[in-house]
Image (cartoon, rainbow, N blue to C red):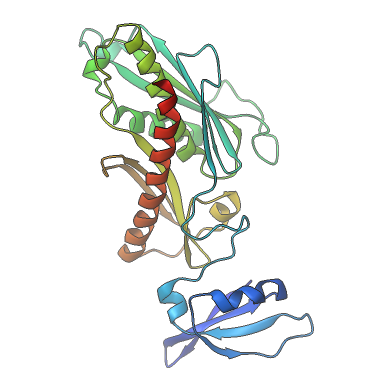
Length: 299
């Protein structure tokens, strides 16, 4: 499907789409007004001129997995996926799968020694065949992307716990991507919170904590603009083609931990930011429900 804007006296009249026959049946249900239809070409591709309501109301883009524009991929969280860590979880969001494991160490970094406070840190990596082509293992040198992501995960998790109440111990979180289909960093944050909660709950059960030193839940998702359409929870193909790409991290109190937004070429407006944040808020609320559902098994 190709899109181009026709102009008259420098004003947008509508959007011209070349529509494949397989998509034509769905046009009747789309939220826009049909202005004119062109004759089919030899390849049976037909053009339509759409009114400006197409732009204002939002075209329901045909996504590869059949989702609506504001729909998350299927979410699954499995607790205790590994036996040995103090806390672990496997999170699946669509075809993206991440193992999150938490190890508790009775020490803190040198800059925190003697202060009576704890620390939460994270490491992030992808298995060599988590993607379509193999990425060689490189243990001697951290890639810049991995460093950025693990710092984001660590910041997000620290916002959810009472660091002073942790005591002088470190919660080291490992996020390993088994399979990547977009949103690996946001899936890692969402799954890592669950694994961290499990680890803290284990220490409480052992009598180390009288109350849970957890202030709130934290989760994250991606949103973006693909072919002029605002989408929630981008898969890899959508993320690759996105003109605007956001990662949004929020707490269950409705507060923001981090917003990462990038324009791939053309700048975006404040209205676009507001619309994308609203989309992210809807998806993250669903993630909180899935986290809560998974953690109910601890009771």
